[in-house]
Image (cartoon, rainbow over all chains, first blue to last red; front, top):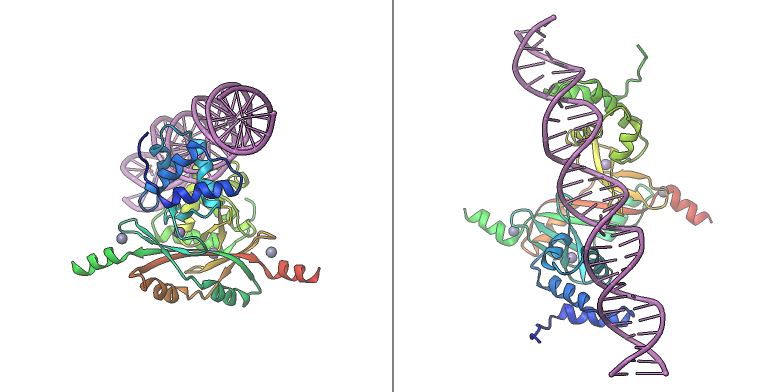
Length: 147
Length: 147
DNA sequence: GCCATATTGAGATTGAGTATCAAATGAGCA
DNA sequence: TGCTCATTTGATACTCAATCTCAATATGGC
Ligand SMILES: [Mn+2]
Ligand SMILES: [Mn+2]
Ligand SMILES: [Zn+2]
Ligand SMILES: [Zn+2]
C-alpha cells in the first residue's frame, strides 16, 4: 500500500461527497488527486491523458462535479478553449497571461455594481456576468521591461 | 434580373472587400445578404440552413471574414454556445436577456480603466478583456413586475 | 477572351463533449 | 462477514460545431 499525499483538495472533495450522499469511490479519489497535481489550468482532455485507466466519460463527469462543488472553475482562454483550474471558492475572475499562459484569480471583484449601473441606462437588469482579463503577469511584464 | 434590396451592411462589406483586395463574389454577397436579414443573434449553423446552396465551409469562412472586418461580433451565450450578431463597430459588450434571448449592445464601455486598476494590485498588466452580461431586458423586466 | 490565382464546396476529418448500457463497485443492513 | 441494490464506471457509439482537403469554378487584371 503506497503512501499517498494528503492534499486538502482531495480531502475536502471526499468530505463533500459524503455530505451530499455521493459515493466515495476509488476513481473519484484518483480524479481529485490528478486535479490537485495539475499546475495552473488544464483541459479535461489533459486530465484524461493523466488518467489513462479512467474512462473519458468518467473524467468529464467528475470534472463537472468538481465544478459544481466549487473546487474547480472554468477558465475561458482567449482562443475560446475551455480550461479548468483549482481556484478560490466564491465569485471571482481570472487574469490570464497571454505570454506564459499562467492564470491567477482576481479576487474582490466588485464589478456587479458598476455593471448594473451601466446596463440600467438601457433598461437592462443584470443578473450575472462573465469577465476574463488577458495580458501580462507580473513575471512576464518585468521580463519585458528588463529587455 | 431580380431587384435586390440595398442593405448598408452588404454595400459596406462589398466596398471593404475591394479595399482589401478580396474578390467580390456572388457567394460573398449572398452570405452578407443573409446575415443582414437575420434578426438579433444567430449561429453559424442557422446561417448555413438559410443558405442551403452555399457550402458549410464557405459560410464559416465568410462569417470569420465579417467578424475580422467588424461587421459581425461574437456573442457568447450563457450555455457556452457561440452566436453572431450585427453590431456597432468598435469595442463594446453585450446585454443578453436570458428570458427572451434577445441581445443588445452595451455602448460606452469604460471598464478597461477599472480593470487595469484592479489587476495592477496583483502586478498584472491588462491588455484585453471579455465581458458578457446576462439578465432581463427592459421588456422582460417590465413583464415581470407587471405580473 | 486568357490566365493566374482566389474562392468555393462536397465530403472527410477533427475534437470536445454526451448518450448508452452492461458490468463493476460501494454503502447499508442482516 | 456477506447480501442486495442503487450508484458509478467505462468501452463504445454518437452528436455537433468547426476545420481540412483538394479538385472544380469564378474572378479580376491584362
Ligand atoms: Mn478561478
Ligand atoms: Mn456586439
Ligand atoms: Zn506570464
Ligand atoms: Zn428579454
